[in-house]
Length: 235
Image (cartoon, rainbow, N blue to C red; front, side):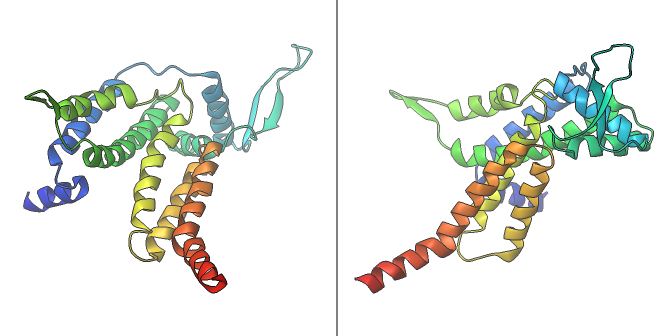
């Protein structure tokens, strides 16, 4: 218990209450969604079709594009418009005998847990003090900690693969804050690169994280230092 408290305190910067509050609320949201219906958007239906065809040995293709003559079978096309990550994971579950619903709920639950832990760490560093209204101090930081997972957790399926970007962004942010903290850390940099590559397998928009990460690291370790030396030499 003492080790757990020390870990929570280290992650939250001493603001353990807010961290735990966000995690508890997020856990309740996840449990409720596990027992709720699972609506499927058009984008997700394409990726699920690809997963089923992949599990049947037909490769990363979908057959949801109709031909002009509706009496003919749909056209089989390779998966290009969407990254293959979600289809690959669902196909693995299908090969193990699980249904699409179980596969999606398992994948989304793990994603929510990872994302909420990372967002809770960030929130605990930001929601530190109560807000003073005259002589009255209102614990708005606790109120925000309670409602944050309720309003800030994206839909599992309606918003497609946005949930992976939602969960990965705070993880990348925390790693990016750790890498340039004092000196170049190869292990954290490699982990950061692997995390961004993993996100790209689920969401092409994750490329902006790759660009932002490159700019931050380049400025911290190379451009800033070289620029300083250049100006000093020129002067």
